[in-house]
Each structure stands twice: as C-alpha cells, then as structure tokens.
Length: 450
Image (cartoon, rainbow, N blue to C red; front, side, top):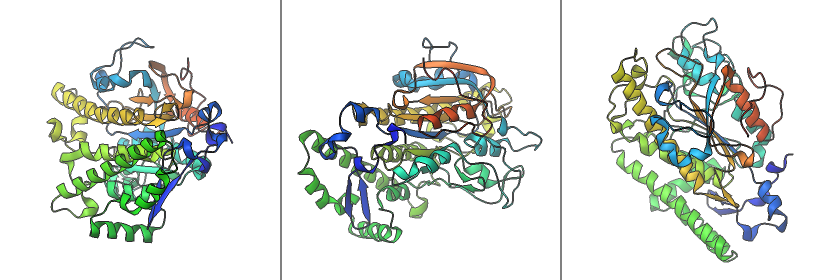
C-alpha cells in the first residue's frame, strides 16, 4: 500500500449516540506517536473529487489567452482569482466517447455518461444500459475500504433511471456520471438532509431513521445525541485540539441549521423534495452540497466523490442571475450574441459556487496545510461549445496540489484530441491505483508538474 493511504482507521475518532456516528477531523492529542511528525505529513490521505456542469461553456470567455504561469483569468473564471495559484486550467482535452461514433444524436447523454468512464454508452432507452466503470469507482474499489464510505455521490437534480431522455438514450445516462459497473450507475444524493444523515447516521438505516425522527420531534440537533461523548472527549484534548473540536462542531451545527432553514423555506413541498423542485435557490442548494463534501473530506469519511451540479441537457433557468431562459435552449445559441452572453453568465455562476468550495477546502486545516493541498478536484463538462455539441477542447480545471504531486498556477494546452482519460490515469496513480490503461487513454499526461 502506498504511504499516502497508510493513515486509515487509526487516525480517526468518532463521537457516538443513538443512531449517530460522527467522524471527527484528525486530532493530534489522540494520535499515536507514530502518526505525528514529518513522516505522517507525507502520508496524509489524498482526496479526489469530480464536479460536473452541463451543456458545455462559452469557450471565448473561458479560455485564457496566455499559457504557463503568466496568464490572466478570462471573465468566466474571474471568481477564481483568489485560487489562481491552486488551479491548472487545461485546454485541448477531448472526450471521444461522447461523440456519436456511428450512433447518431444523443450528445448530452453521451457527454455525461462517458465523462468519467471514457467509454461509449450503448444506445438504448431500455434496461440493457451499458457504458463502463467510472474513474471514481475504480479508485473506490481499490482504496475505498480505508474509509467509512467508499465514495460519496452528490447532485442537485432528482434523477431518472429509466425512460428515453435524449434521442434514444436511457435517462440513466443523462443523470449519472458515476458507474460502479458498466451496467450499474451510482445515483447521486440530491437532498442535503439525506446526505447529512448519511454522513452521521452510523450505517444502521433503522437506527438512523429512528434518531432522525426523534430529533425532529424534539427539535434537537445531531450534536445533542453525541453531546456527552463530546464533553468527555474534550477533557482529553490539548488546547489546540479543543479549539479544533469546537470549530468543527460549530460548523456541523451551522450546516444543520442551514438545511433546516432551507426545509422551512420550501413551503408546500414534501420534506424529501424540499430543494429538488426549487430552482430559485439553486445557489443555496449547490453550496449546501459543497459543504457536505468538505465535511466528508475533513473527517476522512470518504476520499472519493462526485458532484453533478446539473445533469447534461438540463433546461433549468437561473432567475437569481436574471437568466430566465432554459440553459439547454440557450446552449443552442446559433451564435446569437445575447444568448452567448447568457450562457457565459450561467458558466460564471457555476464558477462562483466552485470558488466557494475551493475557499472552504483552503480554510479547513489538514496537518500543516489544508484540505485543498491534499486534494485533486476536476471541474468540467463533457461538452465544449453546446451549439456544436463539440467534445474536443473541453472546459476542464484541476484544482489542488494532490499532496504535493501537482504544480498548479498554470494554463496548459495539450495536442488536439488528447484523451481526457489520460488525466484520469494520472489521478489514479496519485491515489495509489496503478493500471496501464483507463477507458480510451493513450498514456500519461505531461505538464502536471514542473
């Protein structure tokens, strides 16, 4: 096993209560001596996440004009200015399996289903779906047993697993980017409450449901169920770790309150759909999911995640940024400047939320550095220009330093049609997963380090 994966169960502490198991961040006061010092810093776990956005991008406002370190962020990427030194802007990568390759229309379904699998989906609207195992699940199958959850799949659109969603392609292709097997997608959890309960439910569905019902009836927090355990633990910690514990518990309670507030604001909707049908508060929904992902990484509950911000082909409007036309309709802009400007606004809106996520990762201490230092976060789409359904020169960002194995702060360009799968092969290597090929990869990528 690689050293970066060696800090597993021994580095985690839990608070327990009825139907509740709350994993805690690394606390030096409780760590064995062997887990402290320079050696343990080098062995801290790496995290890998994939953030998917739909319908491509207005590439003119996405792509920097200069290569290397001396590049200016174009208007769409401007919200990432504070994180410029933590980013690789990657141009030239392609998704060949998103192309028709003889299968006709259906580029949106192919874009999402091939984005992490680098495999051609079988064109069917029936039950005989087939694509490939996604890169996140390849990693989860090899290193997922080191954490409570092998992987965490999040999203914002309530999915469909059957029916025809795109020109003869099953809806399973349009709503899923993570695939455990070639025929079994991993549907994302779109409800922040249920994702929260998954992180703190302890793995026993019956007890977790009972605890959730009791908390709701008594108007209690998840922290009330572990308060005695937390009090006893606090007495064993040094001053620095007591502060760290207090800050963590405060952040959990803050997130819980925000979920409660979102539920209360969703008047007239069943609780299990409280945000899925409310497009007007998409910003809050996205940020709640990002915060849940930060908690999952902070507590080492999982090291692998996917987040579908919206499914490909989504025709959601964004009235909060004064875009009332459907996203998919706008993506077929036919070079209309007004429509392209609205696409750019949607792209920038999504980037603003991604910047929030990176800020949260950077603000979360992990050893001598922060979570972003230890992470590799791919952000992008399986389409470039949605009007042409182009699958080359994709809008791809790679954020984080991968535990010191990446050299961000640059714009790099690869030869035309360089497979996106080549990047995944390198990320797998950094997660301790060694294989010769992945999907349609042709080799490893240069320029990830300097």
